[in-house]
Image (tube, rainbow, N blue to C red; front, side):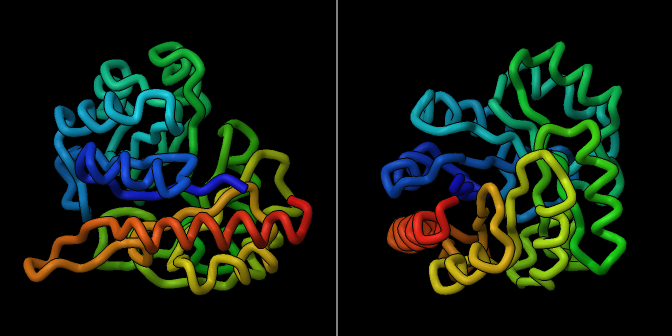
Length: 228
């Protein structure tokens, strides 16, 4: 069971999450769109350098076009590029170009879990993307994810049954509900941002290493119980 922890804002946070057992570290890069916990490309580079090969490094991009991603992708060389905007979605051409610029990179496309139509959308993107992440949506946030709320896990379970690529479950997952989510959906991995973070007085957030540790522990235990 893969555990993803988003959205990291410093090298120190990243290493705390790696030490807590996270398999993937996600960083939301500033693409000119207002997004929670986004960082500059320079900070992202520092985080990725600190992580090294201790965990897979995920570049999160809310973008209006593929062209906006190509430069950062080339310079940062992540293991995974996560496309999660609600204006731009990966295309077969984008996937091909991304792999040319960053050999070995995997393309992770976000699916907005807003209703039954998401199932057909997921099947479509599974045809050419390496992985899918099924996430909740907050209309006030420019992108798919960072909503801090769950959605209908029955739809996620249907998607897992219908696609052949790995599926990551996201959306309001934390230490207290990740085991049940895994039992219902049986995904390849699980993701957490809001429920493993602490809100700060200025409205920003910071990762809570103990919450991350419990999230990972509970996710791995549930997966072992199910033989996943």
